[in-house]
Length: 86
Image (cartoon, rainbow, N blue to C red; front, side, top):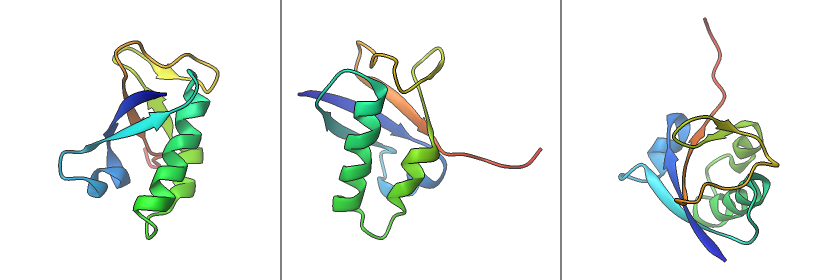
């Protein structure tokens, strides 16, 4: 199991004063992180809409990651909720 530090932006930033949480992940792809984060949110923050994770993007220091991409070697990603507007 790998610990991934997720930097929180937008609606997620209200979940933790440090604006990041550590997520234990089994597997090495972004989809594995997505599943683990959704489960963690449902458990630790039941009032939060955990389904938002399904529509959010993950990014490393350089690019937006797709679900089948490998998790970054440094174990740090950002989660970016969907936004609207111009």
